[in-house]
Length: 339
Image (cartoon, rainbow, N blue to C red; front, side, top):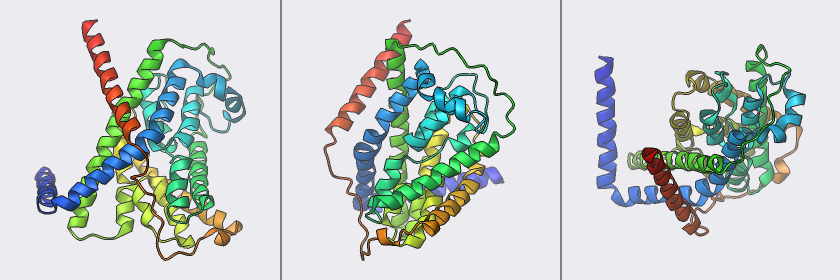
């Protein structure tokens, strides 16, 4: 019975999507174009460089030189292996998919099943652009939301690893692999991950267009579906804790991206369950921040939200990057077949 219900729900959803694509073709096309523009103008320029460099740091072993001083200080507070600690720090600044991508690229020595639960944080630039500039026209309020998410991740990491007894005083040899193969594999890995992320974003553009076709107009629901839609929130200071909770969760679109990137290497049940306390914790921290620090002077009174334009700039670089990634991936596949 349950199996038939799922099949019926899937068929019903497909019929709705097809109906929207046929009977509301103009608006649906606009939604898809908007999603593609987000990929070309925002996601690829913001994520590719950091994702490729982060993967290279991890695979080459250079992360040990960069993060070892911090690791020696914090390893008994956040009880992680050196590799896990490096992934944790990179995830705090790289944006949602970076943590998942690095976990899927990590060595077989990583056995911490809770790692993904706290290696999940928006990038500071993303939050500041959407919340700080897009809603309040002031970067400080976006920084407050990001800080709330960052502190929440740190507290969860401390809590989940407080009884971790696998951390020893021995540190791995700081040898590095700086070969061209490591660099190429890092670029290919980042390119493959970006294809996945962009495909999911476009798919959720179709879903969002279908919901609008059905007459749904609640911006909160669209923000839960795709987090960048939060830019349409009213510039009201009391909304800031709610925004902190939403950005801590990331939205269904990003959760789907994480599911695709991890590819079964880590169990996702813990990750999904920890999104609820993470959101609550971020909201409370944000409330404390705006209580102890006067942010009212930073709120711009406006009758209309300031939405970040997605059609600014030139997409040629992003399109070229996609073409280059396809060529590199195809060349690597042919090389593996030849060998």
